[in-house]
Image (cartoon, rainbow, N blue to C red):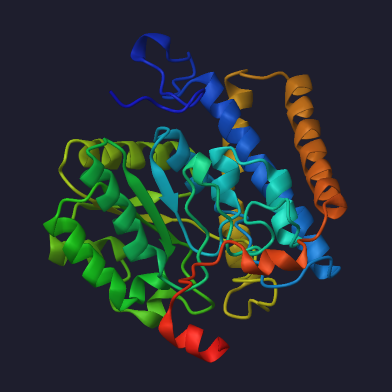
Length: 351
């Protein structure tokens, strides 16, 4: 029997709160803590990036936090998660220590990828997180591969493969969907649809603005989900996971969300208005969950402040850890590299 992650289970009808919430007090508190940690962590690293404390690209998840925490709360240990380069929220929601994530941004040896991956290549296999992938859409067939491995091994685990509305245009998606449905792979394909890909709206790139319809030609169960509320995300993922665990195959979820910031830190965001951003911010997932907590008196004002202070401290300690950690030694260049010692052409060249 599949078990939910600790402190994220749905309440039974006999334990539902008087306010009518479908989920437990512990779940709402966990969602609030995780989303706030994601938000504050990314706000801080955005400042540090501008100060040139570290290099590379930086794509923040601010505004989309409900998708990650809702997906994690609806799944169990053993399930696999894979996403694109906007990958800071997922490992935090899965429980990865933000210290090793900050260290990875700084290119330090204590980072989750030993400082070799940077912002776009976070990994934490122990938590079930398989990246962080910089090539647009690359994780789509790999997500199906993770699902195939679980089916081959006979587990009841599922693979959650997240990608953006822009990556949905990749041809590999169609090959993957065909194979996934043919083999009934236990995979949940999640379009984190923030509407703008790198900077061009869905309406300007396709005639099919309801992206859930992409699964129709493969007869893949497909649904539109409100991605600004973790409750809705949780319920959609939970239903899709149950279908996958029964052996009924994959599901496509068009989860409608929004990034408050640009595609990356270098994005001037000239393709949308400030009024549009403000309209989405009015539906902020953190404020929504905090409102439920206050309405149902799940936490006192003092306890809410304590969580806020804990998050602030976690972020500060994460940056301190990153800045004080050592850089990799030069010999690290030759580690974690796939190689074949007797490969003929390399051997001939070195001779």
